[in-house]
Image (cartoon, rainbow, N blue to C red):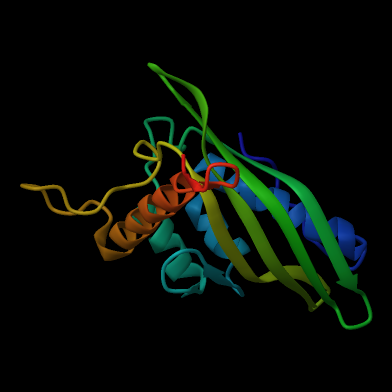
Length: 192
């Protein structure tokens, strides 16, 4: 059962309101509640590896085209957000946050594992007494097996499940995974 949404009003100190918005994002993704996620990010630009996405409907559509949902209506993931650093300018009604994200997934027949890790860089503003996202930049730097989490691009003999956006997202994760695998070992001077 999803946690009830609590408004991030002026009654909540800026730091706490921002932390609550970041936590709410993870809850909504893990619940597969893309309509509510679209509302949460309605005033934001969401940037991942593809073109920036702006607005409630566009964000909801991109998530539906990209993330695999299972019979229980969820992606069977836990987005764990850590190393949170928040800077708030109460007078200006703005805030910045940066954090790490680790995405865990478990499915029947597939044990719990980390499938991706990276960083979030966020911007917020207080408007009409409520704190809201204005920008979320997702930078995935470590990629494991995301084949059961993200829709792939075209499969021979089948129409693409996620459309062009999903194919670009998938391709960028594969490229990031390959880059991460080419880590240079200083003592040996070659990739390991």
